Length: 192
Image (cartoon, rainbow, N blue to C red; front, side):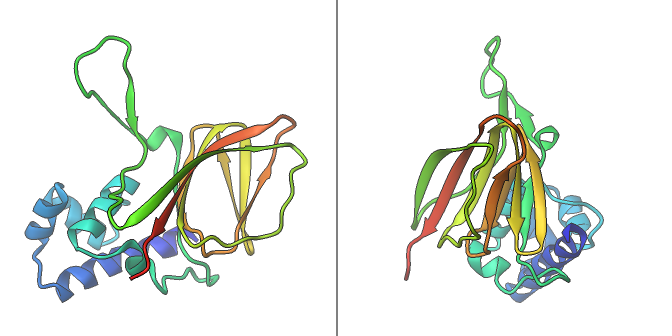
């Protein structure tokens, strides 16, 4: 699923950039990345981090819903962006001993409502597939959780994160014998 979606993302970035008559250099400046990185992404030679992908989409002045609209994998599922704990960007905000920042996700939230919750899943928790009118970001605080999307299942461990369109039918399952917990951020876009 992931490889097919990544090619579609690469192609969509290139298509939208050309539609807006923006050069690779202009897009790189707007997204605050190198021209070489944009070129590599557009040619499916590298996988952008979640943060870089969001910055590029914002630089193209495209709504996230619009960017991912009608994007399907070969199995006809919408994209789910997974970021593993080891992929987070480490950075220093200011010089301070013992402060360790990891940027796991950045999103502009104008014209939307953000709902941030902690979800705890008991080992035997169950619910059928559901849909939410929001983009959903999940960060696993503890345990192992398998997210089911129709026929696909993505397993996330402590420290992993995922972003997806909540309109994709989905449900989590605790894979462990103790309570699993996750930080959940819902991005509800205002209807226009």
